[in-house]
Length: 230
Length: 104
Image (tube, chains in turn yellow, blue):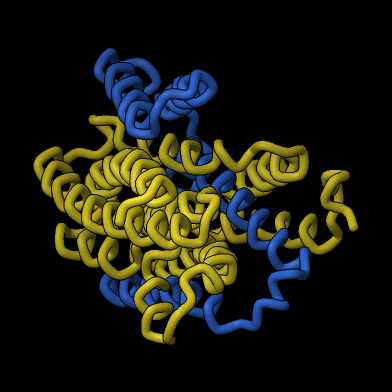
C-alpha cells in the first residue's frame, strides 16, 4: 500500500539519484584519461562505489603513476572514512538481520544517507535509502562505462581540458561542505599546505599532509560553531 | 604495485570502512570528536586535491589554462549550477584557451 511518506521518499530518491548518476560520465572519462583502461574504470565504480574516493584514486594516479599507488590508496581510504559515519547513522534505520546490513553497506554513501535521514518516518527513511541506492548504483555504473568509452575515444587529456575538469570535479564535491566557519578555515589551510609542499614531496603526499590540518582542527575543535560546543 | 592492485586494495578498504560503521556500538556515534575529524578530513582532502589538480604538473607548480578554468567552475558553483555543467565548463574553458594558444 503506497502512502504519502513512501511516495515522498521515492520522489526524493529519483531527484537525487538521477542527478548523481550523471556524474558517472565525468568520472569514467577522467579515469581513462588518468591511465586506467575501461575495465579498471568499471571495476572501480562497481567495487569502490564512493565518488570522492574514486576521484581521489585516479587523481593521484594521474599525477604520480603507479609509483604513487600507496599515496593514491591512502587518499581514497581517508576520503572513505566519512562513509563509516554514515553507516553508524544508518545502522538503526536499516535494522533487521545482519545480512541486510551487509547488503546496505556497499550503498551507504553521501547521497543515500542524505535522502534517507531527511525523511520524517522510519518507513520513508528505509524506502529512501534502498531506492536512492538502487538508482545511483545502476546509474553510476552505466554512466561510468559510457564515460570510459568516451574517454577512450578522446585520447589526449590536456587538449580537451580533462585535467581542468578533474580539478573542477573536486571543487564541486567540496563546495556543499563549506557551510560553516570551521570547514572553510580547514579547506583554506589544507589548500595552502598542499600548494607549499608540491615541489618538496612526491605526488600524492602533499594531499595526505593536508589531511593533518583536519586532524589538528578536529581534535582541538578550534573555531567550533557555538551551537555544537557541549 | 600495479594499477589493478591499487584499485582492488583501495576498493576493499573503502568497503571495509562502510561495513565498520554497522559493527561499532551506537554509543560511539554520540561522541562528537570522531565524527568531527571525519567530516573535516573530507573537506581537507578535497581542498588539497583541488589545488594539486589545478597547479601541479611534473612535481612543480605550473600556472596554466587550468587556473582560469577552475575559476569559472567556482563562479558556476556560486551560481548553483549542476555538477555536470561545472565539470564540462571547466573542460571547455581550458580546451578553448589551449586551442587559442593562451596559457598552454
